[in-house]
Length: 231
Image (cartoon, rainbow, N blue to C red; front, side):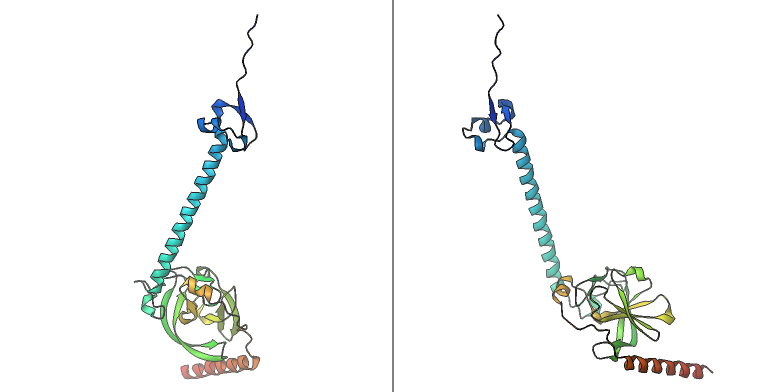
């Protein structure tokens, strides 16, 4: 007579709803009397992996917050109004450069050189020419992370933030070729502060046409005077 093979006992996993033999459970899981709490080894591993992933993500998040707080604390000790604190030993921008209004990044660090070039530049808030002394100087438009051209008046091609266009922040004089000048006082260097500076300001480039015409006339007269002086 053939001996009847005894069937090994199985128990159902409460997660995957499959029945397994004893080898597929840990001792503690196998001993559980309640089916709705029993988990097979595979499901336990998935759960542990998920918990480990979440812990790692939380760890990374805490580290990022710590690093950001560290940066913010360091930035609190920086006087951004002091030009000497804005430059490296090579006279380049030590920090990233941001738009004062929308927080958009305009320049990466160590890209532009600070120069002193006393020049009158249009101030769109007053529609008057204003003396500017310091600029971040660049020779390639691709060095900007974000920039746009605004009004062109005579040989002056004004630069603005491409995201918000709230103000004139620089200029390109077309007779100087590929030379771009970002106004040092019109930008910011602390990202957290820049993002808080969101303002509902009117567009800055609605400049009266009569002002533009008078400016063009002044520039033409200046050119004529320079030609006569050369003679």
